[in-house]
Image (tube, rainbow, N blue to C red; front, side):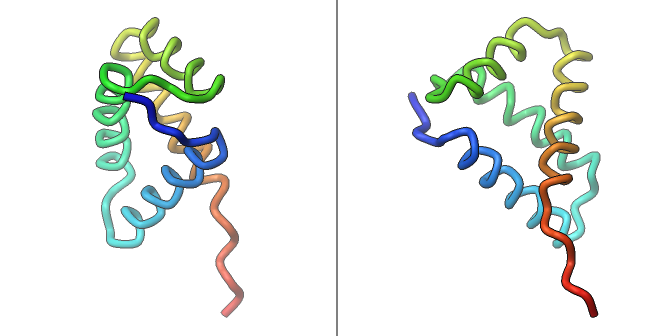
Length: 89
């Protein structure tokens, strides 16, 4: 199965999901755990449609559990850094 998302679309979609999860009070550890499980699913079932997503799949496939966990943490951190600043109160 191929998911037709550009790299920016992919980052925006995951960033929005992380933001929603944090807004409803889901802990960062739970978000990372879910992202790790999603990474396993995507690596097994989805054919990446962009060069960037293909690279992520190849890195995921090459990594062991510890490396995949680190990769997940870095991706969550990258997407959190993209959040727009909160409006002034």
